[in-house]
Image (tube, rainbow, N blue to C red; front, top):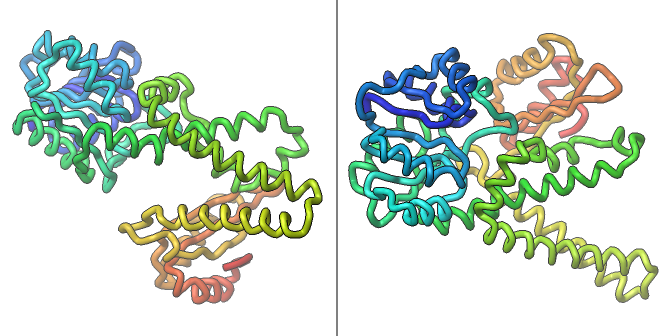
Amino acid sequence: MRTAAIVGTGLIGTSIALALRAAGVGTHLIDVDPVAARTAEALGAGTTRPPPDVVDIAVLAVPPTQVAPVLAASQKEGLARCYTDVASVKSLPRRETEALGCDLASVVGGHPLAGGERSGPLTARADLFDGRPWVLVPSRTSSTLALNCALELVALCGATPVLLDAEVHDRALAMVSHAPHLISSLAAARLLEADESALRLAGQGLRDVTRDAGGSPALWADVLAANAGPVAAVLDAFAADVREAADGLRELASGCDEETGRAGGAGLVESLQRGVDGRSAIPGKYGVPQSAFSAVEVTVGDSPGELAHLLGDVAAAGFNIEDVDIEHSTDHRAGRVRVFVVRERVRDLAAELRLRNWAVQSC
């Protein structure tokens, strides 16, 4: 791969362009927003000048509903030999590209599973995709050339290719991304009815649950609409679980008889245990279950160098950090940092940090 065109210079498109530039690929930046394209150009992601010849691959970094019309227009002008996209929904773009009569032999659908709550070219990073899964969805008519070109793109961006069927991809994303985002937004919206005094009690748990609610409403409305059926199916199952939990709690609150109370309590424990088991099923670092890691919680002052000092002490003591969580205090210039290590070494780390005068809260 020597040349590429990036159509759409948001977070994902600009990050792909930066990764390709780092690999020596000549990249041409195209965007309906000239300010976004020039910003990406100023970041070193490529040039806004039109390509003088047909490029090797065009990456369509546009919302799902725009993939088909942008592909049709790009093929009409002969922009590239091969095409891929980065939309988080695959079935709808495929149906629409077929309906528009696009040349599907040169197309392989794609979806890098990377990003963040913030958008725009200024948030882009060349290493955004390092070690991340990147789904490729070739159709029955995709050529070997197109698939190999898409695989090379994934490799140059440092990601891991995963080949899936379009419908399988959309059902999976509904479960692990799209429905959770909507649930996070609905939970955050309930906070609009809370008093300020209640919100001051919010801890890290609430922040974790509502973190995804900070995404662009317009972008996410487009994604959810494009994958409406699979997302609705996940929400239906979730709603049934919520209704069952609410009914059980209402029985407990009504002062029901002892036998019904025991049954309601057991049902609540079962629901909570299923949550523990479900979270444990999420692969952690290197695919190791998250339950293999445990955390030491340390109070850290909110001043320059404190966090770096703590992490330096952990490394100097010979511990490999598997993950880090930070909870900031709203009332004091301090925060709590949870340093995750393999479960077998968590008590050793706590003892070592106490020897180094850190305020260890729990492990």
